[in-house]
Length: 192
Image (cartoon, rainbow, N blue to C red; front, side):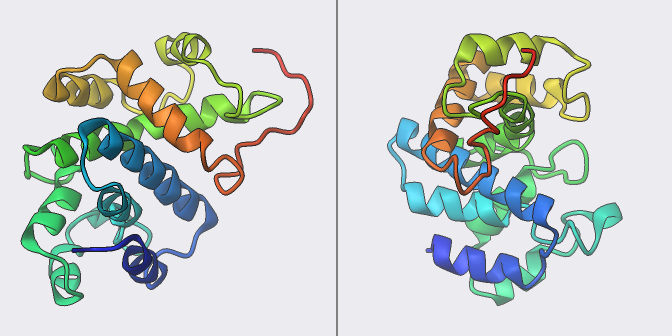
């Protein structure tokens, strides 16, 4: 079974850009929180989250087309690779999310982008981010406009959960790692 330590090691061979590493960590910790919610192996789900954009930096136009063979060769199982491939369903992959892990990765990939953007605007970052404030930003389609609300909604429907519930779980998971995620805030007041 893929461990977080091994996922970090593999990811570092392909991903060097700070913003991509930060995104991988955001997804990693959100996935850990989702694993807890479903009573699954937190470290394993974090590892899948960490590796989900393995080939993106080197092949942005061919995302997920350079993932399967190298990760299988590195010792990942078919199920682990499938979970990673499924997060691109409908955009750069035809692997439909079926397991809870796959559905969660599909959903939180985009969702964490909005959470991160929202937390960055706050004086105390994610540390005091409440779901009400997040939902206000989430409903504003111009805010973090590149993050697909349609994908998030589709993922939540697959999970049989609403956006508010999934976002609450992800925010709590990311709060535990606020410092590492650079989401502790600036301490300066900003307009919410």
